Length: 85
Image 1: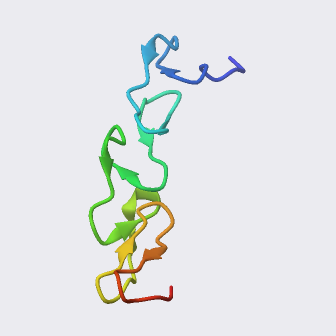
Image 2 (image 1 turned 90 degrees about the vertical axis):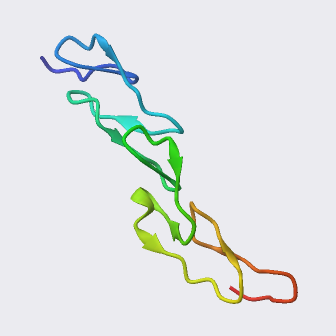
């Protein structure tokens, strides 16, 4: 009883396959997914909604003048005619 289930499996006997998508990491007992930055949902299948970024899409984007926020890093991609961060 010293070893965790191998990556990609979970359950009492490690018999269940993890449902996580897009690089999500499965809890070795419950199968609950921890999503990487830019993804959300129970199996990490949904990208962050517009205006959100980061782990669990919990950060608010700070882009101005129509700039688009990177869902992973939060960096702004400026609209035509604008520059900056």
